[in-house]
Image 1 (cartoon, helix red, strand yellow):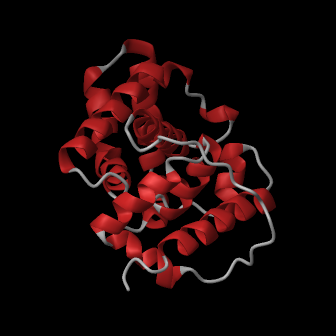
Image 2 (cartoon, rainbow, N blue to C red; image 1 turned 135 degrees about the vertical axis):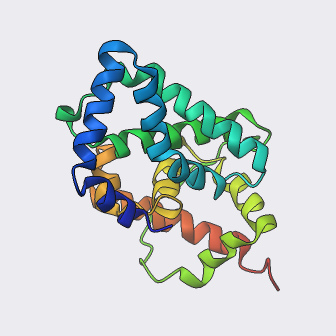
Length: 199
């Protein structure tokens, strides 16, 4: 799914105003109908984001539900005036839930550190195609899950959420250059680790 298109679609034709109206209803009255409608607006996008990272169908559904439960529990604290739209806020919740899931599973048996160095931002499209292979994806997830949450957040938002480096920099309060360095360094390590997986 084209997430940039989804973002544009949400902002077109008064849908962003409708979204804001729904959020206010939930915040002020705990309106269930408004909550259901807001969830329906984003369910497919969030489930798709989770499903690309969690290969087990049932686990992905459960985790998607947890994300929306967490969203409803914390929506009182959402304030669009403090920067970032609702979609960005929701994806932050989703990313954190995914990181927590990997952290609590058997994936995170050892903690890795990422040494930042000079890694050229070359085209890794030939490599990232391997994410479409279920077995390879699971192996890569085990590898990525051993890194700190901030590294995972950058990787997941860019690779699976189609966020730009600029958007991630704003979201994580880091310099765009730092975000790029962390991402490309991790991709470099992934490529090194899994380059012969299909040979």
